[in-house]
Structure formats: structure tokens, C-alpha cells
Length: 460
Image (cartoon, rainbow, N blue to C red; front, side, top):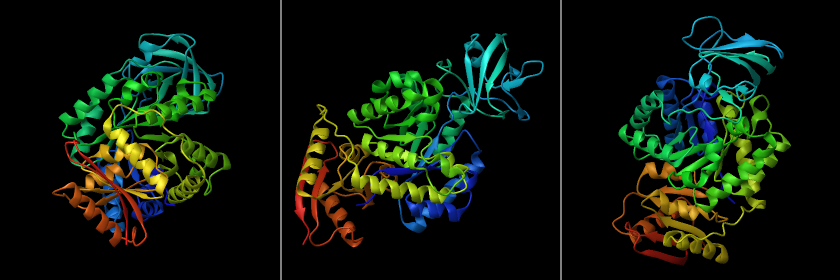
């Protein structure tokens, strides 16, 4: 069985090397994330050159994903300082007078109350608020050893009242539009209205064809998950930031709730944060991490996003190799939970019927798709085999590369659905994917979705 769940990796200092990028791609990386919270356009352009060169040399289609920083509060620029539990620390707005650790946004101080817990650097530092002034605050260190510049600052259980798109995001969107990204990940999405604002900003910047993934990482994002899913192309379960707002023991339940919502809405869902975190320093994952991947497969995620494991870790290619190996074995032994809810959509009902037919007769699914949604709906019902999708463009092939089980095949534009399917069949045969004895269930839609053609075919 081919690996069905997908792998997205994060670029960073550890991947500024063509040989490493090529090894990650050869090992099974399906998407490459560029985190726009770090680096600059020159570095991002270098990452894109490495990705494009490797994908062309290997003849594969991988998604290029831009992750917008979004409305985040961070520490400013300063020399890192050592701290100790019990010590008092003064935080101040970056332009305020006097000594103190700079914070880059006044929203932090406007949101503070005495007794609030402040988490810095994904919870590596925890402080308690003791005194508040207009542009400064005195805090007591509860845990942690060092404060470093540019680290994120979270108020446990609270959300900052910030607009969904920042000036930095707007500037980064121009880079996204100019460099043919396939997906944009939007950070700290709290509502469907926020998604609409982000989409308009992307369209105004010239990036209207990218697919939008909402990162769910705040209480509002969790509470509004259904309405958010109605207006995005997919979601990312950002467990790291969720862990800043909810008790850690609640995260598995929240994770399952978000994934189940995405499955009901037939939208892609990617699980992120601390997938193989131990591999930052060691060449093997832990048994617990492997079990975590199995749980994600059973819950039905489309794929996994590794972050620090590849961006700053010592073994980026080994991370992909191990994750691919574990997913493939999990796909053999664990079936994703069934989606029982049927929508009123004719497309979704037919897609489910195609998947069930393929499973009943032991066939592979072959689709010719003009757009993203045709393949998305087939993938959403998690067939236990690969979905071969003939597509007219390389951009659509790259976008489909992150969907469960989807193997995109570029066959070019077709004058008819029949012609598109025939071209897809020929391409699969030429690649040795299908041959005599292969059993196929084929689906094609007319561009206006008025007519679907479903065929069961034996290859002789």
C-alpha cells in the first residue's frame, strides 16, 4: 500500500542546503512550509529555488505553503537575559522610557490584569502579573531560565483584540503573489469574518488562486470551528498555541473535536506541532510520538506538519523518512473513522458512492478534475487506496498533493471529460501504476457540475 496521509515540512536554517531538501523530497515530503514569522524575502526566495530545483529533478509535485505571521504579540529586540523562578521582571512597550524587556504591541498591556499568567516562547517561560501601568508591567517569574528576543507572548486563556491582517502580512502577501505559492496558512483565525478579510487581502495582493488554510490555535477558533470551516479550504490543528490557552490534559479532546468537525464538513485537516519533536536532537522518534501519529491516522487527518523538527533540527531528512515509514505502516493497520453525515450536496453523495464502490470491488479510484473540490470530496471519504487524479495544470497538481491519498497526474487541458480520463489512464499506464488486471472506478464531472460519469473498468 502506498502512503495515504501526507507530510508537510518546514524550511529553516537546517534546510538551506539543496542535498537536504532533495533528500526530504525523496523521503516523501509532500509540502514545504515557509514560516514568514522568521527570515526575510531573500531567504524565502532561496528556499523556493531549492524546492523548485529538487521537484523538477525528481519529477514530483509538492505544495509550496506560506505561513503568515498574523496578529501575534512578541518580545522586541534586546540582549537575551537569564532569569530564575521568583525573580521580578519588568516588561515595557518597545518605545516606552526606562529599563525593561520590550514588547512589540500595546495590546499586551491593554489586556493585562493582576494575576494573569504570561507564557513566553511556547510556554518555556511562565510569569505572573503583579503590577500594571499604561505601557509597562511588573511580572514574577514562575518558571523558565532565559528570555530571548522575538519570542511569542501569550496571555493564558485570553486573546488579544487585534485585526486579522497586519501590515507585515500585507507586505508578505505581495511576495506570495509574485512567487506562485499554492497555499497560505493564516495564523490566529478567530472567526469566519476574519477568513473573509484575509481572503480579500490576498486577492487584492494578486494571490486569489491560492488555497487558504486556517490555523486553529485560540479559544475563539475552537468555538467558531464550524463557521470557519464553511469558508476556508482546510484547517491546521496548531497544538502548540492551543496548549497556551487550554489545560494540556484537554488538548487531545480538543484535537479530536476539531478533526471531527473538519471531517463532517469534508474539509482537509492537518495536525501540527510536536509530531517528532525528539528528533530535533536525535535520529529516532520516541515510541510515544509514533503512537501519536497512529492516533492522528485513526482520527482521519489528511496529513502532518513538522516544524522545528526540520527547520532547526539536526536530522531533517531522517524526520521525513521516519514519518513516512510510520504513516505507511499505520495506513496498513488503522482505518480512519467513518464520516457518517451525508450533506445535501449531490457532488458529495456521488463522491461517497464512488469511494464505497471502489472499496467493495477492490478497485483504485481514477478522477479527471478541473478544480480542487472534485478531488477534495473523493479524498474526504478516505478510500483505503490511492486516488489518481488527472489535472490540467501543475498548480492544481501541487495543491492536491496535500490531500489524503491523492496522487496528481498532470495531463493538460482536455476538450471533454472522456478525453481527460483517457489521457489520465494513458499516463498511469506509462508510469507503470496501472496495467493488465488493474480494476478502476472512474469519475469525471462536466465543468458546470451538471453531469457526472462513473465507470467501473478492467484494464486488459
